[in-house]
Image (cartoon, rainbow, N blue to C red; front, side, top):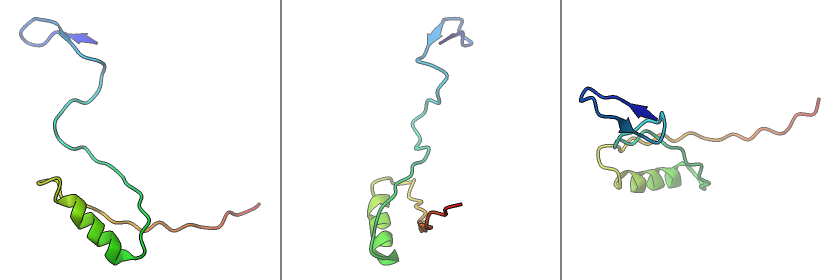
Length: 68
């Protein structure tokens, strides 16, 4: 994809994709024994990304398959 920025020279990129250095987000599904183990794991992960240390923990509830 080529565009003309304000300098008038073509700028070639690999597509109409977001480019930046910030962490956008991510999801990880983990299996743990209890909430305490999930919290320990989340705290260990958050120290590796200073400034981006928000971690949400959501339980996954599996429902039995319904046969209609």
